[in-house]
Image (cartoon, rainbow, N blue to C red; front, side, top):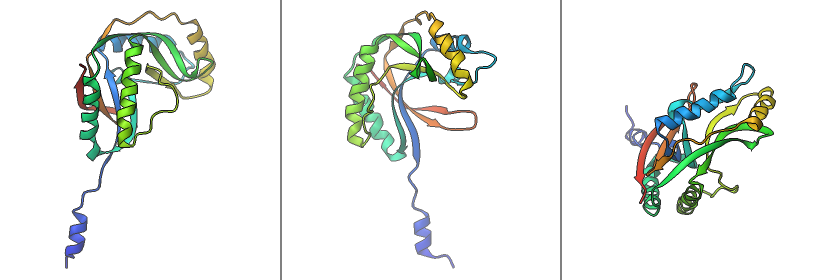
Length: 202
């Protein structure tokens, strides 16, 4: 016999957790330019998990795993921050690495124009999202676009040399007019991103 108590318990939905980050999406032309920089760092003996062209973006804040019920509130929070900041122009330039060029693990492109506005946006997001329990990052935010992550130690020396010798030109100007709230689902083929909300600046 079907137990009514069991039936009621079974109907209760379990909160889903979603990996969430807040980003600035880039036009295709700039993403193609970034992929060209990946190719300049590639080599026969270099093993890097490169960010695929559709996924190249600038992360302003990574929230980690979030309960799905909080997503609407997070989107409203991002909208409030966006409305307090005016649109601006951004350019990318200069290759770098975390933790540093001599010991590269994560490869990235820096920001040549618009870093002050990005730092201001990041700071406001940190302050507002702390109300939801998201702890501000201890280290200083460095605006960047991730190109790839090194998968073995043997690749580091060669890539460090390429980074020291690099002479990167600036990207075309990117008009930053909105922020995007994104989900990230991990898979065997790498992360799959989906935009869950967007908020216009100004």
